[in-house]
Image (cartoon, rainbow, N blue to C red; front, top):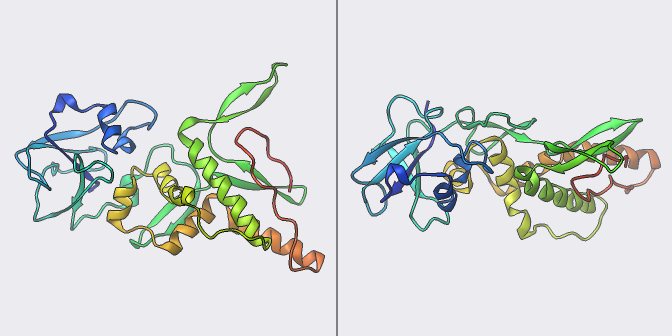
Length: 269
């Protein structure tokens, strides 16, 4: 079993904490990205990639086994963690490229299996799901939400929990754009804000960031779009649009209601 390794140059064991991991762009190694707990086995090394300074090589013992947490440059590939200015590196064994089952998070969200560019199937979470009610499709938030009550003491749907909130908001934006294109509206092909959506989708179910995704070559421009379609279950919506258009004898039809936030109950289209 071989997961990713992480090299922290000039770092001592007692300096590794949740705050440091976040500063180095390694917050995804925390068991809960909003929390402080993590499990890393650390080995002191005399040198590492880059400038070859002494430091630590760390790995999650749940994902790296066999006592191979160390720096072996002839057997490994390394890359500086994006945004860390070389203060952290990520690596893996060339003959043991990390697989999705080794990087899966506990409590991953349900979704659809998608074949990515590494030839492996990864579960892409559906965060804006659909269900059928009275022969109509209803959009709903599939992310965990806080339990809350209104002023009368009646239970209501609470906010999306913080760790999924950005993912939910970007998925709703993507849905609005996909719906607009389906209805023939003039919608830009890409928006800079949506660049993070495929990354958030993968990072929700797996212990990865942009650095690991780039190292493994998981995404292509086409696959980015397909991942975005999965998170809103767009194939189901599109089939619904086609059926409505066919029933009306028209090439266009009213699409599903645009998402407007994370607290309302699902409403029919």
